[in-house]
Length: 196
Image 1: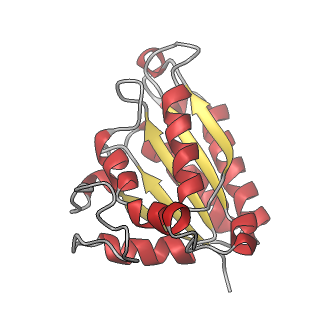
Image 2 (image 1 turned 45 degrees about the vertical axis):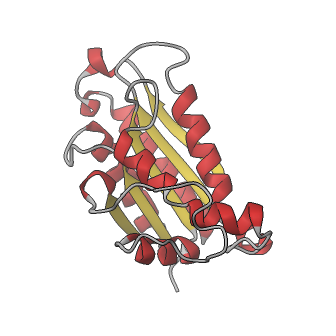
């Protein structure tokens, strides 16, 4: 049975630079034998988390939308790929709002002491993080990486590796940097082999 990977596109531009890198990582994971489901987060019809601790005593979210099905998929997945641009030195709003909805996982793990993911499954699960940034600053990825790492801890899918490319305001088109496209493919393939 193939390993299941969820791929999150954090950019609203479906055929932009971030999407191209994600597609290369997906291709690598699929060629390594994984089954990959891509979610275009900016175009999903989901509401933001309404209140901290609202889901304290429940294993489900009080907001009834398509996140219930997403929570199930995140419990079952073996790996995660997140691809996002940096916006205002952080995760874009729709992707961050998506991550915040995993308060259900947070409460289960940290307040009830019963994570949805067993310690054995946690050891097997891995996250690949892909990000681009317009600015050519040495610290430009610090915010997004901190958020991705925290998210990985909450959902018990630890941050494993990354593909990062800054200075996109100068580069413009990621296809002019074949080494970055190749890195995304290679890391996706490696993720798939490690999960297999």
